[in-house]
Length: 335
Image (cartoon, rainbow, N blue to C red; front, side):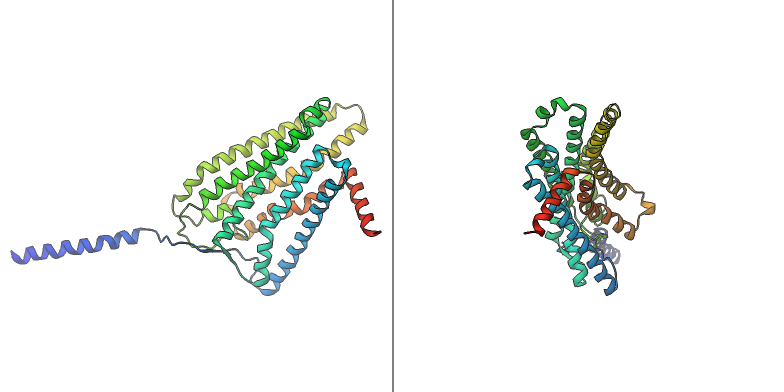
């Protein structure tokens, strides 16, 4: 009898000791992350230097193109109109977008490292969401500007005056800022238990959420629904604006008037198409075709290419902007 009681006591003690151990085995390994490891462009030193040189050329081209647009619009009084005011804001946003991600990637390729600090990663997420959101909002406003200019030219001065332009530009920047605060706060409040290796050359929200614990990503659902609703609303607004624009242009009796209208609309439409198509493909592509190399290529297309190409798109068909840039070039050469 005593042996039986002693056996039961020992068995109960073993269960008490094993319970915390079993609980520790079931809990995820959540440890504080002090830094992240970004995706490297290449493994060999020669390819790393090649990528550094390529991205340095693209970055300098973006700086030069957007810098020329900023200087031209600021210095030429003929370009002090709503369309060029919004173009100046677009150039500022493009400079910010490419400067948020590309310099760090170039430094990592040059020094053969993948490390980015936790604070640096949070800053990249904040500024990339801020600038991309503000740019998308600004492109929506620019479609409204073209709609009023072509479909309601007699009311253009009252609907798109200087005060209205400043308010709409401030709304675009403010919308991007609110998006950035919302997404950055929700993303970095999620506990991470899947390591610290980010499968992208910069800190991107979907890649960071892949490192979160199971179901922790659900905290970001509210922010995601809000963003998708706003993005879809802006997209519908842009489409409807251009439907009205093309209907009005095709009804114009003058061929010269149609050509002038198309010359002011097509650059904006090309920039919008490039911006939306690359971002939609990056975030809506099916998981079956997803791979680190494809994700890297698509990210380059929507983060690096538009800021470098936008100045070229706008200057190709805009005669006033080309004339101003030629004058600036002649002044630089002969002084």
